[in-house]
Amino acid sequence: MSAAQPPRREVVTGVPRGARRRPGHAPASSEISEQTALGTVYVRSLMRSQLRAALYALGTLALLVGTLPLLFAFPVAVLGSFSSPEPYVWVVLGVGVYPLMWLIARWYVRRAERNEEDFTGLVEGR
Image: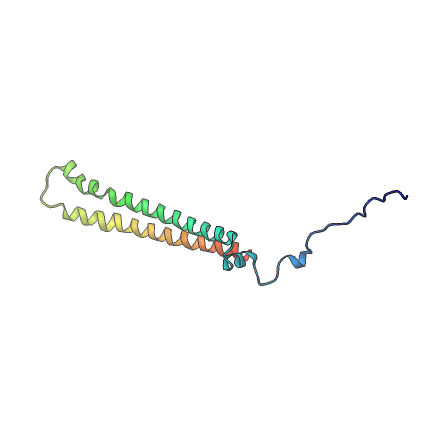
C-alpha cells in the first residue's frame, strides 16, 4: 500500500478585471429592467427619497398656509378694529406668501432633479 498523497492545491482567483463589467451595460440597469429584488430596492429607494422631498415641501407649505389666519388677525388684535383689512391681506399674500411658495416649489424641483441624478449615477455606475 502506498501512502496517501495530500490533495493538489488549486489557486482560486476572482473574475478578471476586464470581465467584471461589460462596457455599456451597467449591472444596476439590468437589475431594474429584469425586475429582480435588487432592482426593486433601487426603485424603492428613489421613490422613498422623492416622497421624502415631497412631504417636506408639503409640510412647509401647510405650515405656511396654516399660519395665514393668524397673520390676517394680527392687525385687528394689535391695532384694534379698523375699517378694511383688505390692503393688509393683499400685502401679506403678494409680498410674503407667494414668494415663499415659489421658493418651496423651486426647492422641491431642484431636490427631485438631484434625486434623479443620484439615481441615474447609481444605475449607470458613475
